[in-house]
Image (cartoon, rainbow, N blue to C red; front, side, top):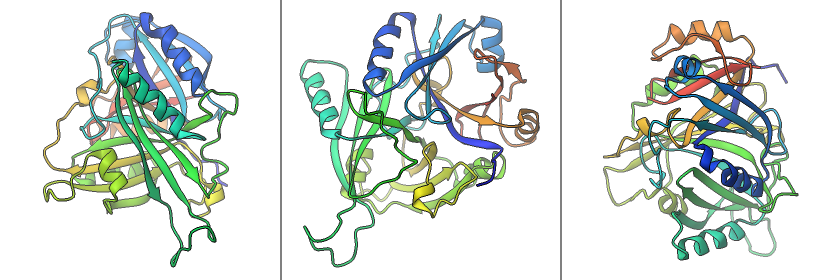
Length: 338
């Protein structure tokens, strides 16, 4: 394995207020994430790095995996807006983290009961998707690889949670057995876009991520249609998948597959654009970060690309050199060097 110059997903960042802090930490503890680092930025520095005129105090949380797929809570004194809220996955600007769970139906039970109590929850119950089922499959006599996956959206969290059946990925979805929900790190992070597919070239041609699936139209399984609310019978609604992974391992070798990848879903149709509600300063899921080995080189490459709002390199709240930008598809990103 080579030593790549850029990671896959390093952190999913969630904007919260000080009043939310205790409840949000307790919530993610149930999914196996615990706080291991904290730091602060004053208004001037936060404005330079994140474009937000507010002090921010951040907490970095990890599950069993320590070098990728972490969680950052960004506690803003003056949030910009309420964020994506209960918007479904199918809006431009939608971000979410996908995690493995050993009992997805336990999470589903909590979601159903939360809705019944009137809690603000947008929920799609577990849907079954087949994974490379063998031809001429015979029940009970052959392996039956599949997943059950569900959507759980709350005002400050956007999650896709899945359970594997009859297959295993040792480096992708490493469950924290001590967590209540027996959940893992983020296997991948999601993005919804409605731009031309060429705008996604930035992620491999400039950032150096590896494209393992390239603008492939979805097969529109019943599970996918239900989760994303894509209507196959509507000719204006078509969905294309592009998948990016970190460099440095052979994606075709399933035992080498790591977590921390990016699933970009490009939807054609009349979608609402909420990207101004999914960037730093917003409440809820609002930022992805990546880790690089030579931040000066990356700053030059991004500055010379079609990216916009490229900031200067400054030290972030965790004492790491960082800079931010908006990619050609409209999403805000931060790169850091640890």
